[in-house]
Length: 256
Length: 358
Image (cartoon, rainbow over all chains, first blue to last red):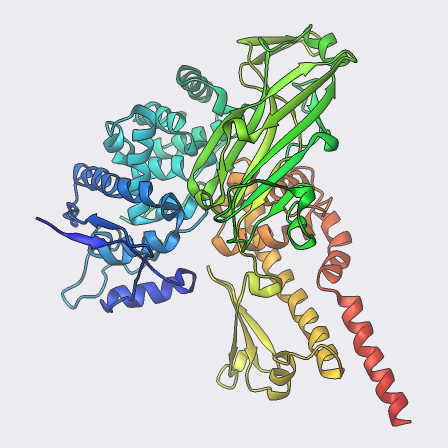
């Protein structure tokens, strides 16, 4: 199917508060996007069937499709991929219903949102936290991390498998390094039972914080992949063997 | 910013060689590089000592620079033995959160006949900076790191692992954002009738402290509205506007910082995050006000880098120094919003009026 479309962006995206986004999406109101100058055309044949009972595989497939779709955009205008108005066109325009299904519990028979608290998934921003919560951008980030680390998409599914772990990695500075992100995902995914009385998610978050602290004295940009892997392994071993104070875990958890 | 001298290194801070620093820019559509020294007054002000401000400058496409640093090696060699390029690497670490970049670019170093380490980074060799490919802020941190598998510190009896940061200089921050100034940089400022809001009786403003904070001003007070919306630069109305704005701004920022500090302390005490991570995980409005005005709360109170503010705050909390905030905050916020000047100017206007009336 030929579905060519001009790439667009949301003008004045800063003016879109969460309340405004929720009201617009709930009412399915039309949103005025602007075309770029010069125009960039892309094939918008995305596999958009995430659905309420989404499978991670489906989400990973969409992530890879979005990354491939945006390859020519990156080539034509590299600056566009850091334009929050562009990501909001994808989230509020092209993929709105997928984000509604994935993060807002779908629509009720009357058309409203079942979980009207997922506005952050339609928004992007310059901070890592906002990037990691943007419904479309997080998919692109997962595919991009895999591509930068391995030259293929083999880790996309693994990265998206646990949304809590993925967000924990990608909202931290350490997650900007693709090899670190993959190694953290691989080693922390393998932790699948409580450790020292801590739930799996809480233990993983503590490891992420400890790794971030260690990274403040080490230039990870200089380490090779094996050294990065060893460093994470050491932190996990240390935390496995020593008592861990129990913090009040407040990391933002994502909407089901 | 890395501060002090951590126990694991003998190097510490590298001193800039200002005479060896060169900075160039290229205007859109032009092919030649223009050195900073050859720029006119308006463009020369881009290059601050540790902040290069390109906010709103769509007419500039590329920049390049050469930076040079030095450090005495006497104590270093005493601790580690003689070091060379088999043991050390000098370069810059580039962070740009908005484009999710975190990369290392290698520079060069040598030991001169005086025993000083001279480190140089030339961006044109490895780090092309086309401004359009970045967003928000670019952090460029010069670092000296260990390259040996392990380095033994004979003074401290420590093994220093590969990749450890053992020397650094203050980072350069390239600012690409078009920054608004004053309260408008953070708050959406709106006028609203307070008539139907009994709890606002007697108020001239209130703050809705949410992701995009809103400062509501009392639309029922037309005299206040006319004064605050006036655009003149001289006369009583202008002076009254400046003084009232200063008072409102101080209260609003104090309130916002208080909310942010409470959340920052909670996160710092309940988590083990690095300062930057704490800042990143705060509510957006709390993170934003700390980025903008958090320096008012710190011991040094002299930095506008959010990462440094977060590190300073964490230090104050860890050492139970939050009491010191009270001692210094009031005078800093008055200076920030020009309290003394605005009140003095207003009183001068009254004096003039009094003389005229006599």
